[in-house]
Length: 167
Image (cartoon, rainbow, N blue to C red; front, side, top):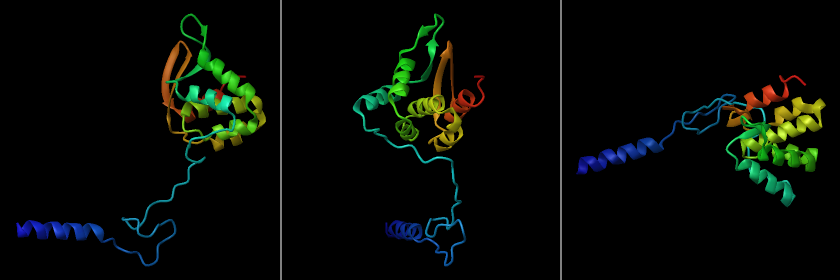
């Protein structure tokens, strides 16, 4: 029993001691455990919860955020008009450029996708700076375009929809 207590004591003290680097190198954060971690800078800030200041617009964004996928204007084999896309169209028409820019930081990848789509439609000359502000580009996004459903990363869909599509 005494040996187990001593072993536990040594394990706890060994885990608490961290080697200190007297002069950290550039890109290193002192007392990080391993002594150094790489500094990585990604485009755009991390996604957060966003309130654009208008209860109606926030209701539209909550609806879009709650959907399991983003949809094109017409979906399914019958080509019926998508309710989700109609909500996006309302959001695009009723939002200012500043409000849509705020939505690029929304926690939902669906809302960020639609915000970037709306910005590129309203202000096509500045779609590259808007794309650079897009947060969480590596989040998973599910889409339904016509009758074809797919899944991938947010940056793939925004890039193909905004930059590579024939206008």
